[in-house]
Length: 407
Image (cartoon, rainbow, N blue to C red; front, side, top):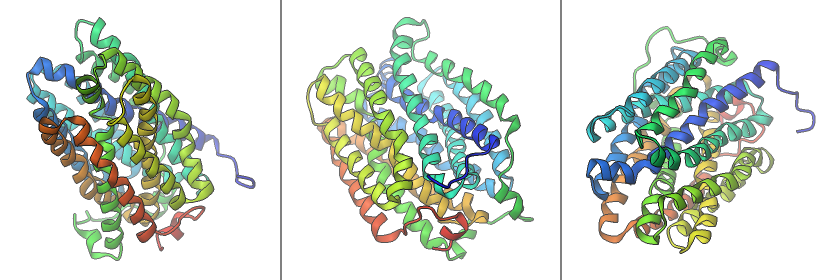
């Protein structure tokens, strides 16, 4: 990084703010995984219904498209503020759910705001930080989701076993820091690139981007996101179900395994963004996606607490580290006026089809063949995805957004 100007005081504050906000993406992602067996028992639903529940909740990640694309008209700051407030409210309401149907609806709406916050944070990070540090910044912000996972893995077993509200407490606890974030966002500024461009005077039609030359990029990135999510969405989500039902681990052992793996993977996750700045997006993707594939396959194949925990280190790393790769590409390959729309279409619409449908498919197969057999086959999809990165996407390392959008 020699010769790269240091971050300004505002950039440092923004870095911290976005990192803390993204912490809750990891907390929420792992929370559902941790409480799923307990929720199934209380609500009386089987494996197939659990897969369908996860799939329904994940519909919110698609509907987040409606918020993310508004960042190109309302501004990044307004959308981020709305998402933080919305996620806080519906996370709390999830803990009050009287039945599985209400829980599913509240969690689905919470995901709309959660993923809207995450996507908008990625756009802000890409626009506000220098090209030479962009990969590192995106990587660290995404890595903070792993910190959320560590916190969740550590506290959930305690909350499940030592509080009168059980799994509901997981959502009550998750609200407290969010209240602080909702307050701290007061000093957040609009991005300089959005200010210079100015908001569109008229609402943009939903299909507007498909009438531009960037529609090819939407399809390419959407396909890569889709293939990636088929594996990463299930690689950790159903690990507790698999470890308890097919490997005989207890709730406490699984919680400990996830906590150890999350902590052990964190140095690698935090370095993943820097890796993209050093070796480039393509070669960084080859390393990261390869480790994701190996990790998920091994996590649903090996036996014993120690081998499974070691495999889970690579699985959690891969599931987390693929995000800086694809976030970098998805924010870099669209111009400022279409960045929110391009991200929304590529990730929230096309990519999230795999995110939403694959848990239901995996849960359906798991009923007959078991969680291990159902999840392990998804490990092939990151390999296909990284092959497409090399075939379809350019190298964007150290290039300004105005240059990468034209590639």
